[in-house]
Length: 154
Ligand code: FES
Image (cartoon, rainbow, N blue to C red; front, side):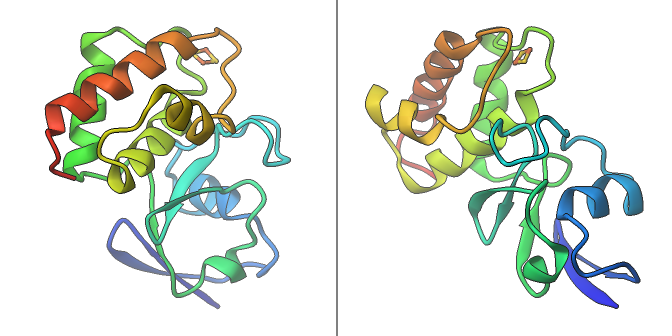
């Protein structure tokens, strides 16, 4: 039995401890907002937060997530997330949408630790999130807009 805390709620899962966190989220807990992309921690579609930091859920065994605070796109609601969500809508960032929950989770993690990121800091923080629709320019613009809106509150 593995105990996980996801979006503030405790869960007990009777599955193999080597199961990737992504499968626990999607198949056991029906949280399908976190996507499977490459399955090798290379594309960022499966990004969630563990203790506030972005991690790739496709490659993290649930045993490594036990006792940690996990947040997913379904549950995160920090001021940084709200500003990111609003900027994403205003700048119409999304194209096909597949990569976007991962993009949003990485952008939120960045703004939770860096109130006014530069272009270089944004590019570095977002470098693990690939977008086959090439929305990178709008992602960067939306992160700047969200940072402005937050005005130092994260
Ligand atoms: Fe289509 Fe990023 S919006 S993959």
